[in-house]
Picture 1: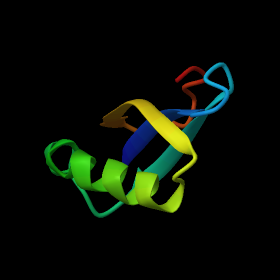
Picture 2: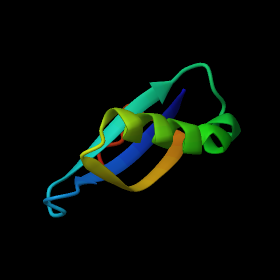
Picture 3: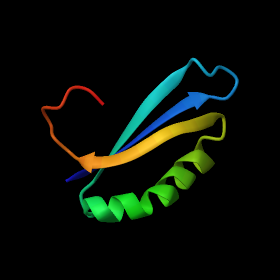
Length: 67
């Protein structure tokens, strides 16, 4: 399973950031990486007050604590 991770901060309060994570069971790591711009654009369209700082794809590991 692949995990898409996005970090975004509020435009008016840049020190207030949040991490969003989405599991993609129907994609490979390469597919996630090539689709990531579309995933970012979709998230940004639905959250216009947030500015996306960075994003990435990785293989999901349930025991991984840090992002």
